[in-house]
Image (cartoon, rainbow, N blue to C red; front, side):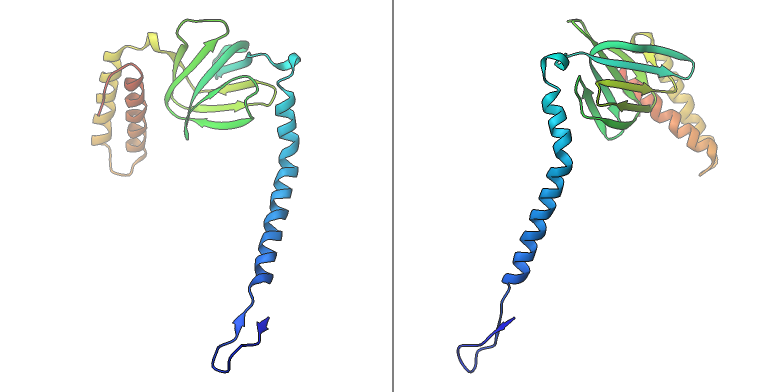
Length: 195
């Protein structure tokens, strides 16, 4: 709406209250919708801290294509090398699906004050369910204690050589690049710097 001007030479003023009111109404409706959708999840999380489910223990299933490392194991925490960043999972964690990058997967066993159990994984997936169960699936996993730093260095150099000798843009060069990245991550996990 245009309001009448007060003096003859003054331009008309545009009233901006109607669009502003619509903006705040839209924002209030959006907030209400988000709260309505989030309320069951918030209530479930709040109720999950009751006596019957307040356990600090979660269940871990850790599988490789050729071997099951853990099936239904009770653990206190798992630190996952997610592609978007490393994160920890404990009991009552929100559900999450994550792609894993090459790195160290750490498992903290319940009641254990010792060091976490550490595995090097070249990638994979982690699915955390709302019932405190986490499923981890990787193509391979090796305990850090079983990794020979000299072999990692040697394999990295072989991958670098294969990368240099491969035709630019070829599948062989891409495979060698992946090998280099995995061995670099593996070296980092055992304290060897490779570049």
